[in-house]
Image 1 (cartoon, rainbow, N blue to C red):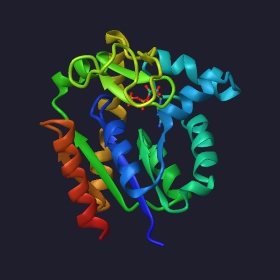
Image 2 (image 1 turned 120 degrees about the horizontal axis):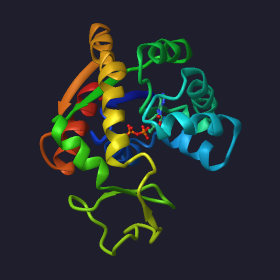
Image 3 (image 1 turned 90 degrees about the horizontal axis):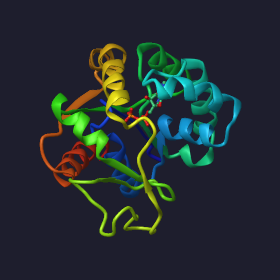
Length: 215
Ligand code: ADP
């Protein structure tokens, strides 16, 4: 069976999660968002979740060991046999080397977005509590106010999507995550897509890159 093992790299608000959802539907491989894994741990008040929340609320990275613990457990689940899309992992060089010890990666898609757009995108983001669908109050509003188009679930704003925390998260990205671009480029695994148009245009760019790489 062909496996597709992908990493989506990009700043908060670059649209990684939105594109990951399309890839999941089309290729039938799971989206693994460490942010979602962490938010679930926080919600369930697990030991990892309790420790992680402090860092998340400050826009900092959660310690590598905690995230790795959640990730390893997730990758061991049977739906990952055909591959997966990592969304939000790795986020620093140490996590990239942790990952390489667990599994191989075929392709890293780096989504590049103009910095000024990011804050606006993130502070306008709303997520469905039930199915995780992502909206934006201006760019992709739901049909009914604060309700999901797919499942009528309630839309909410993430605790860390306030302007102050967003600025800190962007800084964390610049200093810790951006060096991964060079890291994967040197390994010959990185392709960069510039996100300068609509979600659908971006989707086409991602699809053609995947066709080129895997078929
Ligand atoms: P975004 O990419 O929009 O910041 P995420 O949902 O990926 O959103 O992450 C939210 C928060 O969860 C991060 O600010 C960070 O605190 C934590 N987090 C997510 N993934 C990781 C990771 N791989 N390593 C450390 N912390 C992480």
